[in-house]
Length: 94
Image (cartoon, rainbow, N blue to C red; front, side, top):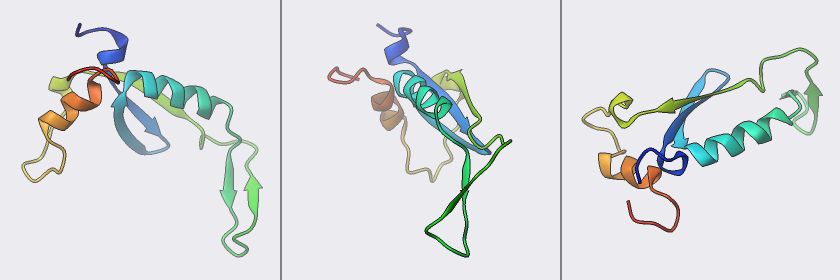
């Protein structure tokens, strides 16, 4: 049934990048990121990370996305069928 959380898509913003994914996965991602420790790789020595004390690096925003809110460019590798399949419950039909 459409409208259930498992059938919904969400928009996730991590820093300045946005992603569309199933709501259930988005909620998992927000949960995981809430426990993450912000850090930056020290490029002079790629084996080290510097923990950042005050940062919005682990800032993650989640919002519900309706299919009519997604604009696909003509040359997009993502098709409406792919979006429908993304929103379909795992193990179920789209």
